[in-house]
Figure: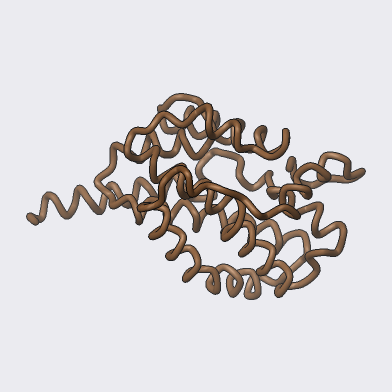
Amino acid sequence: MGMGERWAMNTDLLRLVQWLSPAFPTGGYAYSHGLEWAIAQREVADARSAGRWIGDVLRFGAGRTDAILLAHALRGADLLALTRALFPSAERRMESETQGAAFATAAGVDPQPLVLAFAQAARTLSVEHETVVALYLYSFAANLCSAATRFVPLGQTEGQRILGDLHPLIGTLARDATVASLDAIGSAAFRGDLASMQHETLDVRIFRT
């Protein structure tokens, strides 16, 4: 590989990181994926319970589902109907559609659920699919860790420790997602799904979901 090719690959990787940065205008900081309700109910009350909750969402819920959808969408599959059918609540759909529309405006792609808008943009980059999926999952986990850090509240050191402990899981999920069939999609994060349904009934809310 020549220097020009290596530089192009590095530039593509930097663009990918930029899209997933908290500074990119998707408004991700405004969404907790139901975590705010779990914190309000004291189901998540410290670093240990926050790490367990976020890990379960990644392993058994939207994290794994989105990873498989993303891997297939990167290969050009049309998954709009399936993606919308998989949302377990109105809040989850709003979260994904709103962030997807914001991402699409900034990245110059079609408005659609976030995972699909991101896939459309990432298809133009010379980055391995497993890396794309891993960084997407990392960004998702980082946003939830940030929400927990602000609202539990946790110290920043604890929040970063939770995120660091999730690295092996993120790597495994990304690797498995790149070879999984669409039939492998399934969710068992029932408490997380219920949290997203209950969140809209909170009297006081900081996050939109």
